[in-house]
Each structure stands twice: as C-alpha cells, then as structure tokens.
View 1: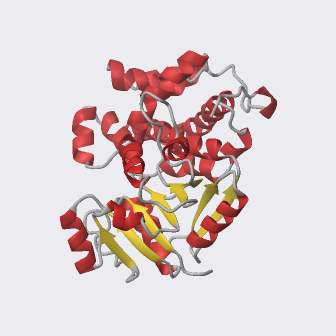
View 2: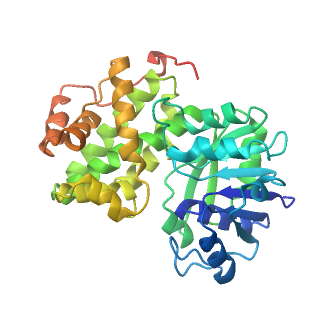
View 3: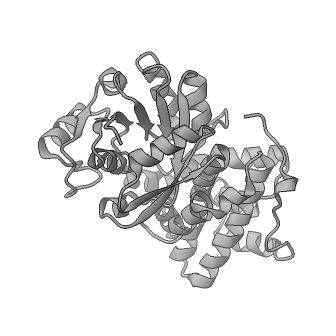
Length: 344
C-alpha cells in the first residue's frame, strides 16, 4: 500500500498504540497531544511515559500540539479523544482538513444531552469527510505487547473500509469489516456499562458462574437496546459486541472493570475517578442510556440496577435482584424483524 499521511488525535493509551501500528506499516504519522511537555518528551525519548512506559515508539511517529499542523496534509485522521471533548476537537479540525478526508473514530462513547454517536458528530461537523469507526476487544496494553488482536472497521463506504483495513492491518492486529456503523459503535459504548457490573461482582467474590451470567444477560440487554435504535442484531454477535463485552468484563486491564471493582470495595465514585486519572466512559454512558431506555420503554434491568447503585447509593444486591427478575425471560430473544428504527 502506498504510504499515506495519517494523523492520530489523542495521545492516550489507545491513540498511542494505533499510531504505532500505522507508523510500523510505513505511513507518516503525526500524533496530536494537548500537552506541550508530553509532546517534547515523546519526540525526545520515543516513549509515551504516561500511558506506555517502556514501549518504544516507531521513528515515523512525530508528536505535535499544533492541531492544524497535525491534520492539514493528512489523508486519514483517527480521532481518539474522550467523548466529552470529541465534538470540540472535531469542530476545530474542520477548517484544516482536506476535502474528502477519511475521518475514523476510535472513541467508544455517546455524547451527553444529544445522544449522538461519534460517527454522527463527524458527519455533522465535517460534512465533506468520509466517515468510519473502529471498535472491538482492543486492550491497549496487550496491543503494545503484540498480543494477537482483532478489531472491526465499520463504514457505509466499502472503499473506506478497505482503506482503513489496509492502513491498520498487521501480523498481530487483524481488521474485520462491517457496514453497520451504528451497531458497532453502540456495542463499543454499551459494553462499558456492563464491565463496571462485572468488576463489582468480581470484588464481591461472585465467581465465574456469575460472570458468565452477567456477560450473557448483558449481551441480551445490549442487543435489545440496539435493535430498538435500528442496529443490526447480528453485529452484537461479533468482535464489536460480544467480543468486546467478554474482554472488558474479564480483566482489570479494562478501566471500567477497575471502576466496578473499586465500587464493590466501597470506594466513592468521585475518589475512584480521581485515582484512575483516565476517562471511564461507562460512567458517562450509563446515565444517557438509562434516560433513552426509559423514553423508549426498553427493559434494561442490569443497567438500571447499576444506575441505582451509582446514583442512588443502593447496594450491589440490586444487580442480583435485576438478574432474578429476568429469570422468566427468553435466553435468546432478539430478532432482526423486531427492530424499531431511529433517525440517524
């Protein structure tokens, strides 16, 4: 593949490893970071000491805190900033990007108040761009260690999917394609809620049986919610759905899982987030999903149970109660023909 100019916006854990893959594939890669001191440190030491100490970055990666410089010549721009600041960054990028640039969201989240997914924000703010999203069971620390990993690129444009696949694919990072951009994004956002639940269950010593029940019932809730919003239910059976759900519900490498563990240990959410030092998207997503589920009358007892714990100071027993309330329900309940459509 011909070398491209690529920008990655966001020098967090995931943005850094994606930039590394792109550079290793021979592309000229600019990594935009807000902090000038971090930029200087990365360019000097070839290391992101904040998120990946000891991980040597490729020579084709150069960091910058100048947003215009980062994107002006880019053929592709990958956006890896938290959902809370996503629109602001994309809006600032708009005047500088090329006509028809490929914009790719790496962010798993939902915008507060608007309930917009990141692909929708990209389309709204940069109408001339070709848009894609990347999501899957992608723990940054394991990608950095070259652990074999699969992800999904979703776009309505087949050529965009192929281009992103070629740009990211490596010997240890495999990229699969999907045209259900909405479903892929929903899977990546919703699973963060249930990772918190799994962390709480782990902290209370509830065992593998409980974790398995949580994961499978969580998948049912995710698919139920997704179908009501117009997503393809089959998407939730892939890497961006059940794949991502399994990994984030199984390991403290997941930030949301760690939040759940700490909640189960009795720490306050304020203290947990301060100690974490990074964004845990599941906390932000939970409130928005519960509000949307209520407005559409979608049953989500697990998510509702977590909401009661976090926002109404209820005990973890609410999770167990929520599970038991669904005992009479179907094991596998979703069908494509039952989907309600949402304008998006």
